Amino acid sequence: MINVDKGNPVSDAFSLFLEAAITTQKYADSAFYKKAGISAIKFTVLKLLATAKHPVIPTEIARETIKEKHDITTLTKRMQRDGLVDVIPNPTDRRSLHIIITEKGREKLAQAEPVAQEIASQVMLEIGKTNMASMTKSLNALKKNSVDGIGKLSRSSRM
Image (cartoon, rainbow, N blue to C red):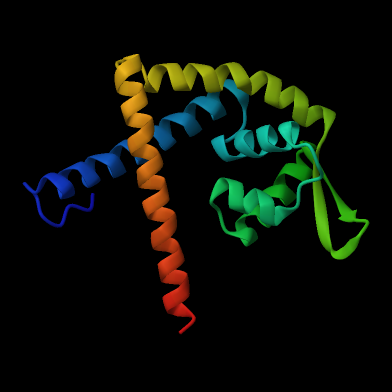
């Protein structure tokens, strides 16, 4: 793991955070594959599509999942091949597509939702309600700082 200054509380916490994030992602993917036959990212996309109040475009999925648009294009093609989503032309913009969850996708989502609850319960097992609120606040700050950092990198690469 990245730990540029072992013994420094900031570096140690950051290294632990990365290890926890990677381990949690591996656990989630393994549990989803074994118990529901899909990946964590497919679950996330199905959940997004099922709860959307409007047709969803790939750019929106990329933004919500913090993935590159070309990765979402590849993913949605696989999901379409698996019968989980339909990809249809946007009636108001021929350059754009709408991604829509199918009945099979809804069934797969229903199968995977208990797995998502099980994953969350396992990962958060030892964290009490007081610590949960503090952790949520800290994670929101980490996410904001990372998004801000991505923005700075994007702006500096355009110069």
